[in-house]
Length: 411
Image 1 (tube, rainbow, N blue to C red):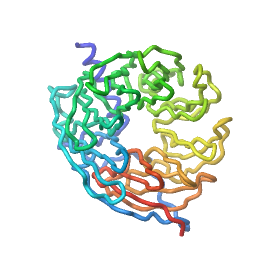
Image 2: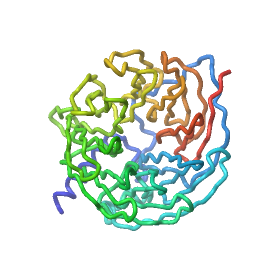
Image 3: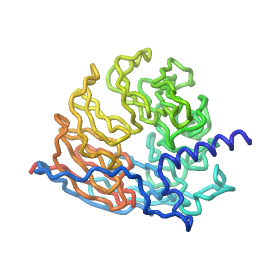
Image 4: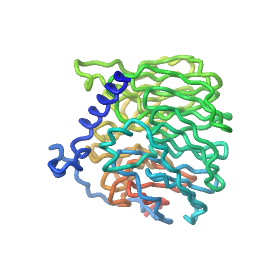
């Protein structure tokens, strides 16, 4: 117990060091105005080629709080389902924005900070993983280690399973099973009907990690998941048997901070390849069959990748956006106009690459050459959750809880 507490304390300390002093602004002697001396890039002027037309807007609870949570909404048939960080969940008609149902998911207490609770005094948010969907259910993960399943028809709770460690990425459903990854390095498969744990894969966790995990991906009865020790592992979905593993990056350096190589990106499956990136590490294309490296780049990222036009799009740790050939890894273009603006993960569709920033702007650039096409400010508290696409409509959940549906139109 003492060893676990020690490791978690170091993990939190590393997170605080990486995220700056804002975590401590609830203390009276801390000046919140002190910022990193590196200045974010200023917005550039350009001739807009597209218009971001907002179809509707609604509010989802009290927003995402101050713990750097990402809670992307999920599309299920004609509904878009979103949650805030405090247990409010709602379904809206994705075409009109009309609310269909709403519910409140209560906290169960416990968890890492149940006794210390020095962070929760400022922000008692507890929904940390979501929104996942599948098999007629909606799934949420919590800071106290629960996965909660709701009925997609009315939001009623169907089951909740205690995984004993924070679930900070959406759970995914496939073939009657639900897969969730915990922050202590475990991948857990649960029954979609009852929530009963079917199998658990344990992976050794480094002393220090980023506050985040990879979202598992299921394809052809194989689960792909990245871990904080720099590995991606492929397992059989039915029983958790490992098929292959690949180390995306080997920890280097003397300090534990230097040795952080978390694979927090969601594995991107495209044809015979899986693409993945590591913090302070590399972006790689791997063979899905055996995990063999096809190409690799010296590039640090913790954001999900995106693909289109035969290219892979990456937002690196400095918020530089670049495109690489899917087959060779050759750089096609690079755009440094968003450096240090706190970008969300990129989403590629049609002719566009779209992402938000910490100031709440939604940016649209061209897949072909990375040039600016358009932007619009949506949320004064910023945008960090992954964007969601439904047919040609883009859905964006801002940090304040504002949910937007937008279409992109040529000017």
